[in-house]
Image (cartoon, rainbow, N blue to C red; front, side):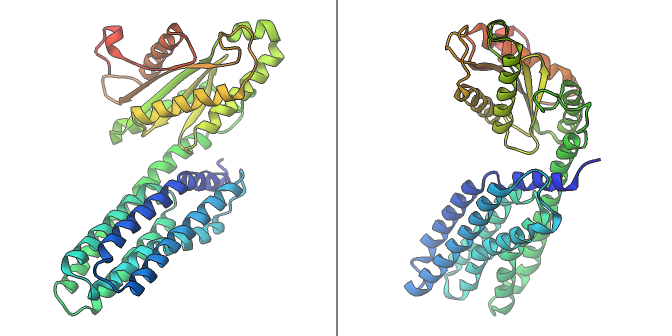
Length: 371
């Protein structure tokens, strides 16, 4: 049975994985607002608004980055997310309060602010929908000042705009709930299978059996949703020679370190890293495009290189990995196991081309019509 505290931990890790990037986006949005408001507001009001907008974003970032550093396995309880809800609400309010300035602004600036607030609410959804209560607080922070000012303003079409604003808010929150459900499906398919039969004893990654089950589940989900699915196959270069020279105990230690580097590189809670067999590993990335999956593979290659594990029989003098990948949209004409076969072809080419590299599947090189 899944541990709810562990599930909460994974959700929060997913929520905070790009907190610094989110703060940078907050600053960009604030700068766009500031550019429009500069010409229409007194300097004191403009400065006070700017300070509040930046402070709200900074508090949210500080809370996110501080919490991420202190998240440990099974350490999160359900009632501990209230500070995150409050921080998200303040971040949303730091944008939403811009609507209070409507009476001081021209019509075209008001329209710009309205559109920007809608875009900001939509842009925050993929990350904050990890916890719907957090996204709800952010959305409320944006919409409450907007609806309030529309109610008190005398000019048309203020009142007639309120239903459209409410419909937009409800639609965004509904979409956030759907994204949350998809994320939970991915997490439950992984952590719900965590038992002795699903974990590799040496590396503590998922084992082959668990990978096969999750692959089939993700394939069916990709078939229904139309989202891309990526798979990376990789193995340790010249590992037999490593075992022959250093012994099987050092070989096991090497695989443990490599597995740790791979797991650290796969930062999303929905990513699955598994030991496929021997020195071979596999990484399943749902809802992931080719470019993002390639970046992930390259990050893994570099992470293993940075381990700097000595390997005298390797051309570089240290342990490296070769990786092959494939990205596709699930179709009725394919099976989930085809994903493994095609990624394995790319891995074979990576090793044939010199090892310690990432190669993505190219159908033109195989004379097939596959993607």
